[in-house]
Amino acid sequence: MPLTMPLAPLEIAERLFAAIAAGDIDAVAALYHPDIVVWHNSDGMDQTAQDNLLILRWLSRNIGELRYEDIRCSETPAGFVQQHVVRGTAPNGTPIEVPACIVGTVESGKITRLDEYLDAAHTAPLRG
Image 1 (spheres, rainbow, N blue to C red):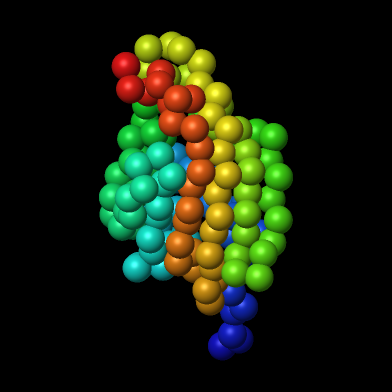
Image 2 (cartoon, rainbow, N blue to C red):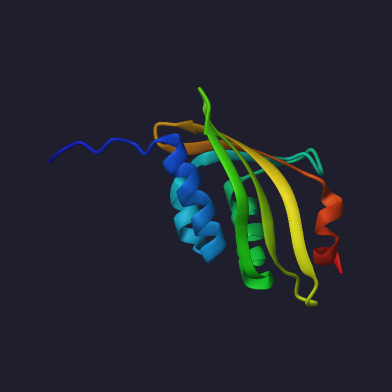
């Protein structure tokens, strides 16, 4: 049986954000290392894979037309950096536009760390 090469960091990033936009949380989980740490600048806290997947599942069920636009993604020695704007519609019908930057660390084809930078003021429509 031939050995399969791990995915390249940019391909992992592309698959990650496509899966989130499609609401395919199982595909997101498959890209995560079991011990992934997800950190957000908005609260300074680390999340486990399980906690992060719960939030992504909520987002996929509650944001209409969820999509990533204005994408700029670059490979780094440790993984990737992606800047984008998350757009969609909040449950109350308010348009959402959240500029963000994600720094991903990839080891052996799995995401081991995600650092998310965004201005939480842009997420106000999600908080009621």
